[in-house]
Image 1 (cartoon, rainbow, N blue to C red):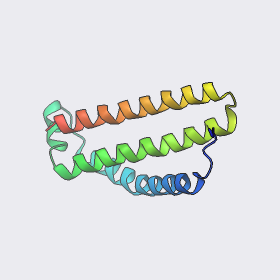
Image 2 (cartoon, one colour; image 1 turned 90 degrees about the vertical axis):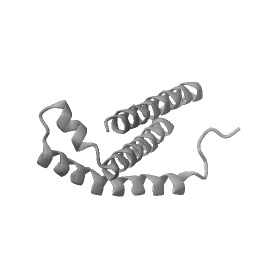
Image 3 (tube, one colour; image 1 turned 135 degrees about the horizontal axis):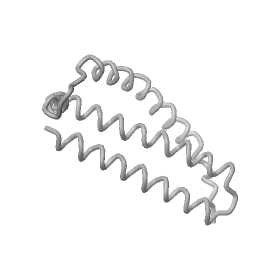
Image 4 (cartoon, one colour; image 1 turned 30 degrees about the horizontal axis):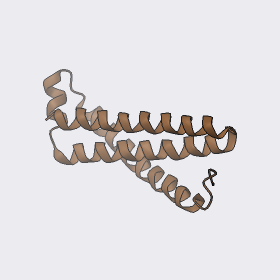
Length: 113
């Protein structure tokens, strides 16, 4: 039984680099967009998130951030957490937390319009 993630190095390396590239372009653009708009009330925030392209970009950025974090945490656990049961529990905790965060982001962004 293999629990070390053998033969997954290239795929996770590519996933880490692809999500880093997406985040490197999306986060500065989104930050600039939010700083220029800077709504002060709830109606302003609703109007800010009304364009579909922004909601799609926010959702994709959240997914990319979660995948990027998962690969990093997975590699950290594989390198430094040696008891297999603890490693699996930590991986499950990270996956549940990140999936819940993405679901929450999607619910907030898509229900704001």
